[in-house]
Image (cartoon, rainbow, N blue to C red; front, side):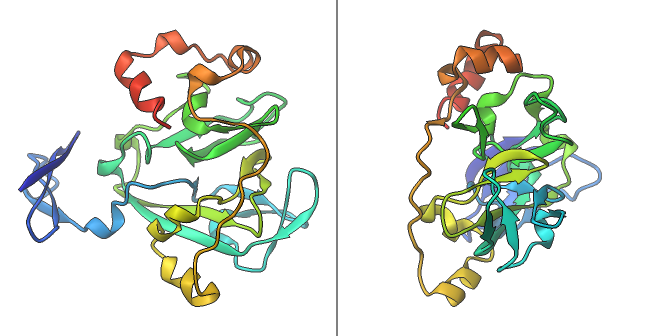
Length: 243
């Protein structure tokens, strides 16, 4: 038996048969309740359900999009959806990489996003020409982590793949499409991709600087969004700086 994680519900341990068990005194759960490891992947790079993606005609919830649908880019062109990656997540396993970040309406300035936007920590939001991981934008108020306790015990996240690494509009805010082929296999429906296209393909990253830590943010962005690097404790800084 190996200790995998400590959660608000109790410790999570893994047995020799690879099953993950939550040991808890929570009266609403059975002590030693087993949770399938198939929905506890560590990779998450996605939009939450309900995220509105701009299309030529209107906005559509990300989970309603299908392969072949046209969506709008930041530049106003139309690109086709090549694939929608879906991953089921368990909130009790939400470390910083898989924890959701809430970007409240207007938090990015100029009225964007037009409504609250929820993405995973590694998802890139495009600001001033930079692709910035959502975790690096957390300011503790208008952009903040969603506590695991506030999430459903199981929830799904979605990523959109197009032919290239594009910038699309999510709740009106510029955000990236899928780029990392090495982690495509972590999605629950990866076999669908293989059946459709035969094999993984590499997608060159867009020619824009990526920022994965708030310590690397330009001062103008930190000031505009109210991001204070020094206000976070050392443990959080170390974890976030690994993005």
